[in-house]
Image (cartoon, rainbow, N blue to C red):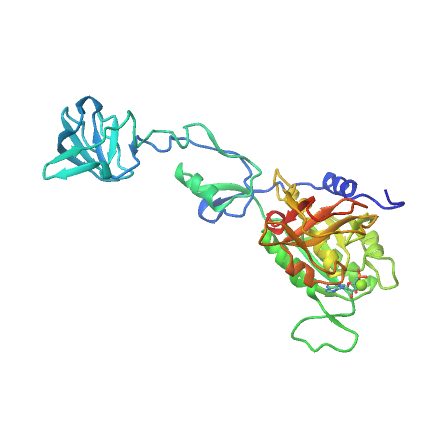
Length: 400
Ligand code: AMP
Ligand code: MG
């Protein structure tokens, strides 16, 4: 362990222990619920399918009528959406996918196994009992839970809810996330770039992340490096947001006003975290809003957002699952000089199913994050040799 540095896990635990889920629940149309977090478990009040129905286009038959190759009279035709009548002995029903199985029938023969002859049908291949019948309740049982509380709804979840007739869903209200960007050097793209200045890339990265996680965003833009300006934006954001995330100004240089400003307006813990990239992290409270201050360095703010803000955000959104799933993947690179801090390396899948390393892991190189498919979470002081397995956090998992 590094002297004076807090481990990622310890910081995360402290952070999450201070994360209070939003309590407000709103009822939204299931048609618009994708991406929202379900506030109460959903149960079905019906069986799905609601009736035995055909899984194929073919003929519904009574097994007792079939001996060898049988010829049956086609007595009725049942389309999806209509209901047939009881199947009389010695007859078959022309039936289509999704159509209810008529009473008396105990199997469906797919049309490929039949020859249709005027009013009759020749059954070439005898079915087993229940063949091609989708049974009542075989998908969802009446009374069964279909969706747990705390789940971020995927498109198919809203489809499942709709399949049992649910029209609206109770979800937690969106988290109001405030963002601001400290730094007198920052300029927005579109404005001229005077000597010594840089573009505010973090605004784009962090706003994109906020949108990805379904936040209601308040973007306070660039805040000058001054105590008064920082205090002012904090007061405003605290009145409007559940969580305030700031980029930059969390070091202890002459132009770093986040610490004194948050201390003046609320309370703050300053951490030096044993991770690379990213070291300084600020966690506090201003009014009722939680505050997280990220390092200004673009790679660091990106990585620390994913490592710390993401789980915090998911928790206050009401998600029951905040941990990112990792993949045990093969490193196709050597990493011979590991840092004394836990590292998050920018890597990319290759065509052989292994991971390639971006050649410079310098935390000032934002290109590495755009090139990569995710991060390798590498323990402190651990060298990696080509072919070894590593803990890979793909963006596809971090972004959900
Ligand atoms: P700071 O954490 O404020 O000391 O900033 C660390 C480094 O990140 C400095 O090189 C800053 O110029 C740079 N930086 C800070 N904020 C941003 C931003 N919003 N976009 C791009 N770079 C930034
Ligand atoms: Mg700064």
